[in-house]
Image (cartoon, rainbow, N blue to C red; front, side, top):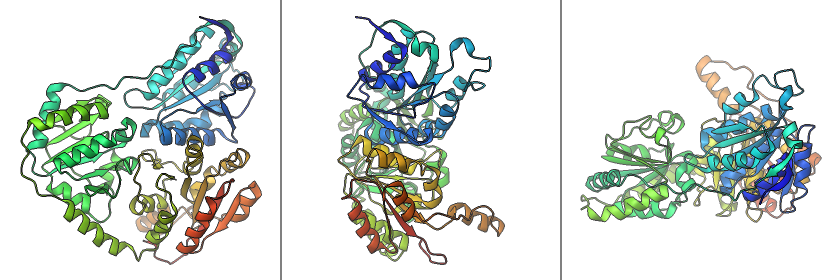
Amino acid sequence: MADYLTGSEATIAQLVAEGVEVVLSIPGEHNLSLCDSVLDFPRLRFITGRHEQGITFMANGYARACGKIAVPIVISGPGVTNSITPLADAYLDSVPMVLIATQSDSHRLGKGAFHELKDQTGLLASVTKWNTRVERVEEVPDAIRTAFVQAHGGRPGPTAVEIPLDVQAQRGQVDIYPSVRPERRRSDPDAVREAARLLSAATSPLVHLGRGVALSECTAEVIQLIEHLNAPCFTTALAKGTIPEDHPLNLGWGGDQYGLVHQFLEDADAALVIGSSLDEADTERLGLTFPETLIQIDACSDVIGRKYPVSVGLAGDAKAVLSQLLAELPNYDQATRSSPTARIAEHKQRALGRMQHKLAWQFMNAIQQALPRDAFVTNDASQTNGWALSFLQRHLPNTINITRNLAALGYAFPAALGAKLAYPERQAMAVVGDGGFLFTIFSLATAVQHRINAVAIVFNDESYSTIRGIQAQRFGRTIGADLRNPDFVRLAEAYGAAGAQAENPKQLYDTLMAAWQRDVPTIIEVPIRENVDYV
């Protein structure tokens, strides 16, 4: 039965029908009626931001943590431009998101309207999987329903719906639709049989896991597969933790600096890639090469064979396709294989002996000892990113989330807040450098206001250290990479958060354990000393 609603009322009603529980916004002239309509739905939590980049990164972190969607509602013009970086990050890392953006009155577009961009719709199209601008109130619910279907379907990604001011105010008979989610798509049975034959015939098969494993929630199927094949596996950075890192067949992530992944790749005569598009960040930049017999499973057929020629491409949902593959494998005799588990365990033990004297490992180990198994870790594209990926162990899907392909600074802390919004009962922590932390420091005000008690560990070397090191190596001199920072402890306290400093790994462990007990966010500064070898 149709309801007589304004465009703003229809927008919020359809978001509720989609299961949305959190709306993030900064009230402005162009979204006031949308924000007001939130008050009619007590189940919705409204989070007030201080900058659209912060709230959209929070929505990004929320989706990575739980797979559900928290919706930013931003004004046209600056609200949209401030949201572009988090949307671009979500697009490149396959994060489902829905952005509601306002627009000037339809009849004023192209005539110098207030907040009007040259082509706001085109700008959003450049960083989203799907976007639209509605023209009538009756179109609103279907546009939002489509945005959610597109965000979750195939290779997930961000979507956007623009709602002009006149459509927000317009009344009409509208239908609010039930939520729809795409069905899990199976792959071609003949292709699955060929993949099963190739994997069964291989004497040294290897499995590579991408973010699609977490998105498809197929950890159990992956473990069953690698144990059936007695095949080691390794992950992309975005898939770290999709199977426990202490599983005896898990080599770790592909950037393993101790060479275990490269050793097994050299020996492999067949590789199965699950849910990874094999982008540059996880292949060429890490010096990875794959055997001639390559099988690729991906929800998006466009990425299969895009970077490396494949023997078999299996387009479909990873969980559904793995179920097909597991059913087919017993029909083929397996080649004789020796167990790799002893070799993996021995190599990891030797690597541990080489790591333990490194200060970077000692700091990460202090975090590890204080970190609950189900806690969330977020990380910026910084020196600490490499430390966390190399030295922190994660054993559950989605418990370490980073900005990978866009490699944006400013992601870590608001993303940790988003994870904490998704799971208030679990701990969330950003491991971040001083440069990246200050990109979105304003999110600390949001965290204090809404009592989102996440933790930020700020490794402070008063520089953009990764860039500074590249400059020094390449040119023999540096420019613009040295920073003058505030006192982070006093800064935290000025916001109403807790602040502490940890000079060594033991202090870091103690301060982190104390932080978990607070109901306000905590900033822990770890000074990085000049001329000290951390790695």
